[in-house]
Length: 75
Figure 1 (cartoon, rainbow, N blue to C red):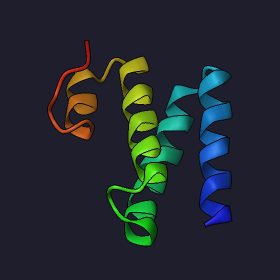
Figure 2: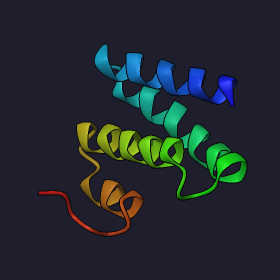
Figure 3: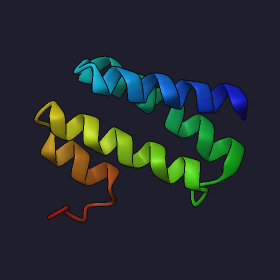
Figure 4: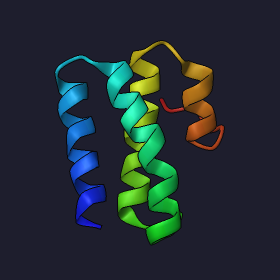
């Protein structure tokens, strides 16, 4: 689980640096790993899902972000 947390930290750093595409790639790869290892409702999985959604919105992918979020738009 420590390696998965480290990947999450890398994605946070990339997003803060404005490299939204790289952050998106890390989170998209990390999300299914966390779902398998910790479960869909685990806090780390939910945080990764939220980060992926944030990355997609930063890249202009509103529809994709809505899908990641479960189709519920954020206001």
